[in-house]
Length: 282
Image (cartoon, rainbow, N blue to C red; front, side, top):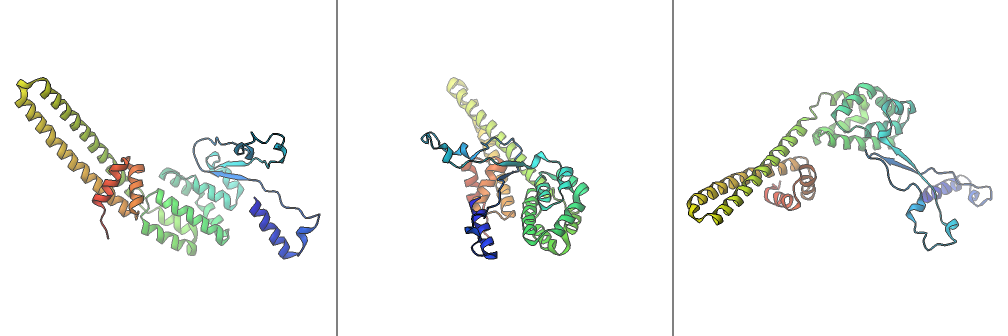
């Protein structure tokens, strides 16, 4: 807020030197806004004073700056409500409401023409914001990187009408299906590994409890060991596939480690080992 007021004074001084020193000079009112895209309710304090320690300010509270702010929760608005605003912010909020392919198809069906109109009228700096938001959307919907870059490059010439017409033809779910399949295979391999470990432990207990069945128990342990090795091989294959997917998304090594943990549920040690073991330098 202070920066906005400082900039306002400078602009007014550039128009009429000395105007900010006059008693009649006033700064514009500013309404603080939090633009919130989350799905959960906003629970943070709504006043600046909630963030200031006033326990040692006895008698000084009236001198401490305080104000509230407005929370704009994107998912609290329907697209039809936003279209009535007919401004750049409404389109930004509509784009940020898209969370999955179903949302995207509904947006194309009901709001494609509106988006093309607002984008066509927007100034260049606002268009740059739209392109950043669309790039984030492409990544969320697993649009291949090269195709996403080509779409954004043509966006400025042809407008959003071209963008939406071209994206309708794209199989934006292909990568998502591949990723989900790899995740399921990794989960199955982990479950098989756990079963094999449990069987190995049971075999060891049986060996301790029944020496007379030592020969039979050893055979069971060997079988369990073999299954564990086979499962471990499968798990390594899945790890290699997951690392390959991360590399295909042009992630760095560190980003790939985070991706393996957050997207596929790997433990930190497993994610670090997998990247170190299977990363292929270009």
